[in-house]
Length: 422
Ligand SMILES: Cc1ncc(COP(=O)(O)O)c(C=O)c1O
Image 1 (tube, helix red, strand yellow):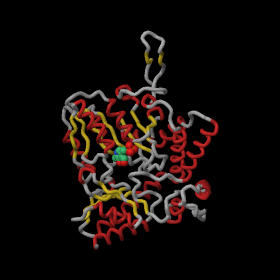
Image 2 (spheres, protein in one colour):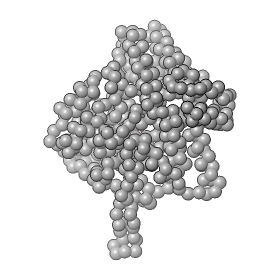
Image 3 (cartoon, helix red, strand yellow):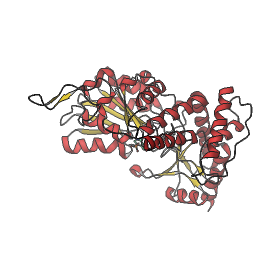
Image 4 (spheres, helix red, strand yellow):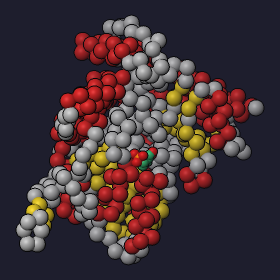
């Protein structure tokens, strides 16, 4: 446990050192002899984040606050770049760390700015023709929906919408029933942004593979929340970001394309890094070939300091322990879900209660209530939540992460109760 103690100490020192947050009163928390999953330990974890002490942040599904160590790493590196005019760096280390984090080869990963970018690369890279069918859900985020809808508009591909079931089996069956001879792609979220249920992606990918259908998974939420194992999932493409549950720098993400599929996902945007050589003086001028790794999908000058921040964010999670993180964040969400259900029969729980289908997000409605009003009501009480307007769902989504605790959930439950009685 010594390394965990050192890690906490280091974070606490950084907490004291970072004054620009306006939260200069953050003092070094006492360092207990930490073992596992107790409140004192999680309080110290909370102190690793600059999060405002007066507020309760329950919207990690939109953006994951970074711990001080990540902010500090990026800040220091940017300072170094601008002090010495350094160019490049940190990319290989970040890719290796991400590869390990996701159980895949670093050569199968590309570094992107966000999920939307990764989805666009995969969506436009596939050779699809008019009439080809793509299965998606009615719960897509704009960043996953619009690339495909745009291809439908421009190229005449057909989007088929699958209903999510209350259980993983039901969802899997619904997908199966929608497959036709024209189905070329299944592109679904691992966890939709609306109701936060975990889809049976491994089973969906098996289904797709058996029928030579492309499987593309929008993994905006799971990395850093669940132990994501890409080889086990067996997808062709997985698109994720580091700025939600990984709590990495904002504007960082990744695209995974399975090695054996790389040549079928055409790279359309070119630039430094995406090629194996090029020649403007040959006749005709030409590109020799595409990079035999994920670099074929990104190019040009990047903010390399952010890559260093990705590595730090992974290190932070590894130091806490990823299984412990998953247990904690799912445990908090389960606590919230159970208490919401027993709070009132006016509450309609949208997130499935099936254990394998619930993660670290809970979405619900209240009968006859406009849920954006509950969001505003919570904000007045310094609680940040996410109102879900997508597809007229009209629900409130609560996200839990390691900086949250049961007391905060109780405060939120009290707010819901007050709102219902008002
Ligand atoms: C499920 C899902 N997909 C895609 C996105 C788009 O992510 P990004 O903003 O990183 O492009 C989000 C963002 O919240 C999301 O929740």
